[in-house]
Image (cartoon, rainbow, N blue to C red; front, top):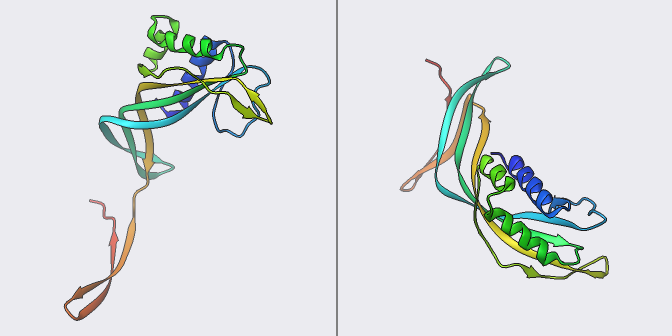
Length: 182
């Protein structure tokens, strides 16, 4: 799962359960006009050892190496609900859906997202545009199987310049290393 796929899965889950739009926090876009929620990835930690796969690939006639990293991450998300009559109720509904065997849980399982824990729901009114808005917030911890792909360009030549000090003598040196093919 890529980061974008993870964010999409969270957005679909939260919007579907809460019945209001959820947006990723800190995107500098316009806020929805009615009730809405935000989610923010506030922490991500590697869990266990990653598997790294290297595969030669050819792109436009040039040889590269494709690197695939597969591993587990523990993501902590801050979930916020704004402009609701009772935002705490909506947050509790979101938390309960992660524990229940529902379509939501089935979708999360298929996306390799596992529920670990959730904090208490907090009511935290916030001042927006010089007026107070009711807000509720809680954190969730999820276990996520991630897959990152990257293409590594080969280094064809590298030049290293430096100096070697031995006692009172200093030797300046430049070394060039070129890739060789068998």
